[in-house]
Image 1 (cartoon, helix red, strand yellow):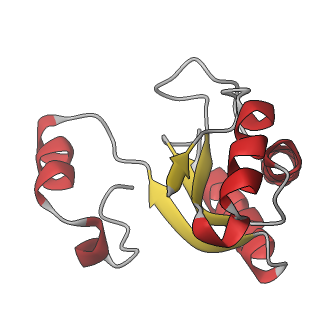
Image 2: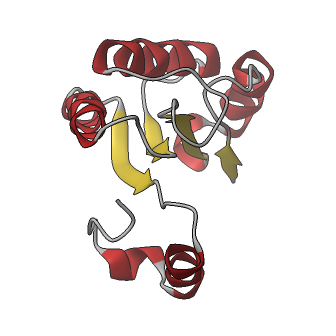
Length: 130
């Protein structure tokens, strides 16, 4: 089984019993958060806020780790992207995430076309979208 949620959805407490009932080892848990401040209504993110949100989401899901942790949307600056990515890497190093993904393509015909036609594994963590 797989569950995809997102920080801020607020559905962690509802999903936690489902994860427990299935057995955590039998559920692929994917979650993430918006970087914010550029092309969406979410407030700008920083590294400490990202770390706190990761901990909050895991607590609500009643799981010690996410199988996939995603950064979605661009940040205000490349420096913030790097700071938040570092917070995500720290979460992975601490056993709070097994895999990390950056999904922050710019809006535009070229990047949207590339994003739709290229398999994420083919991107290999490249900076194609930012």
